[in-house]
Image 1 (cartoon, rainbow, N blue to C red):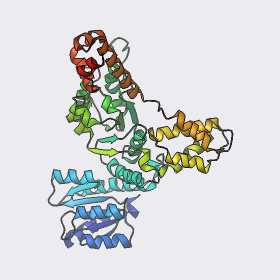
Image 2 (image 1 turned 60 degrees about the horizontal axis):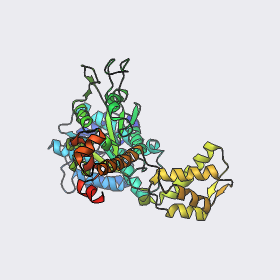
Image 3 (image 1 turned 60 degrees about the vertical axis):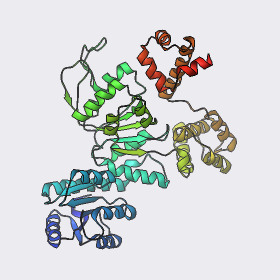
Image 4 (image 1 turned 90 degrees about the vertical axis):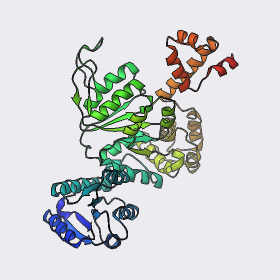
Length: 446
């Protein structure tokens, strides 16, 4: 989108400001239409094509935020910038969280106006091209609404928390948000906080200096530095140890990190997206997740639906996966039979899209026919019913079973159990709380 062909609808009840801003914007090369109120603006939007709406906040009748809501509802994809003579931080925060692309205080600064318009038009162009979300296959209105919200927040440099069950596509969504943002040409780095041993995670995130510990034979640049100017996805953030949560919070607040073993701080410019399938509210109540970090990470929350909530996507996903899988393996398979597709669309899918991928992969790998039948789908579904757990889930399951065994060996005596486990009593109590275990239950089972 270039300035020369961008069409802007300017809305304000002040005729003199309309004239002044129109001349200023036309001088920049924009095509400008004006409206004296929101009702007039909506009629113009219905009759013409615009790339951006620049509206006053306080107007007689429908105000600027009500106009924004109508634009979102009826003309999704057109960015809206709000102007006000009564600007406040709280109004700006509320407006940007709801999806407004910019919030300008009168008198309007010309350079700030130009930068805000350029940024909004870049987002509009990316959103309308669909290239940013091309790997997310959907025809579900639930997902379309979520993607619409995602590209609105992508342009604003706020932290995002992605929630949803395992296998719903949180990393794909994070990559899409990165692609739709001004940081798209910079690095996208993803790390699973639950897959890296606790004693290595700090070094992995923040880096380390030569000699910081045994084996540190040279300086190591952490993921925050590798993602500088780009986006860092902290996947399974709910598994991050408490002592590292403190350091992460400090890094986000101060926008700088200190590598392990170094006395120097390093400035960072990173957009952080976090993801988890855990109940963070429950983790906070149990003292396993810091409330201040949660609010720092959760400026905007996007919840990804389970596959059963977007069942209309199953046929289109299955066909897409079948085609790509067949091409990858060089197999001549063209489609699922009607009754096989019926079975796919009515299956419960506890493992969500990840499970669907596994089922299609198995069907393609084993088929000897160009059409995959019901029996093969039934077999693949049966074998995938015990979903292979994530590393975090497997570790939690082992940890709980280990605690049960060691507590039973100690007849419910926490001090003896802690000695057996090689942990102190406080640590063992925390682990018991995490896994909802208590000594009364253990003694009753002994």
